Length: 78
Image (tube, rainbow, N blue to C red; front, side, top):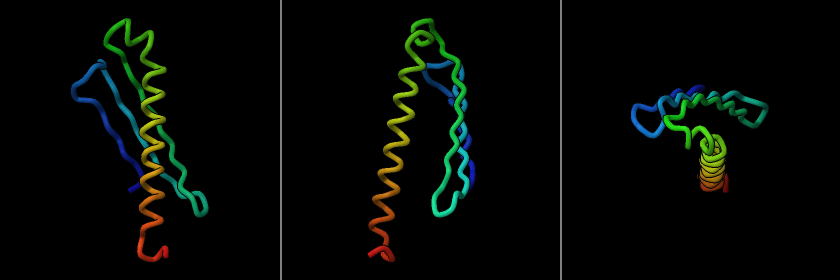
């Protein structure tokens, strides 16, 4: 798997489309994330970008923690 594309079907935005692309970078993996969000209200337009940035950072941090946990618990990684 090299790319994940997703779009919102229902929710609090008029539109939310995002893509995560993964590429090898030596012994690491480079992740490129792009999202396009169209808020559905002036309140979301005003405060939405900082909230979305925080949520995306939190999600990616959680994914990295989980990937590292799985790597450390893998049978060939004693």
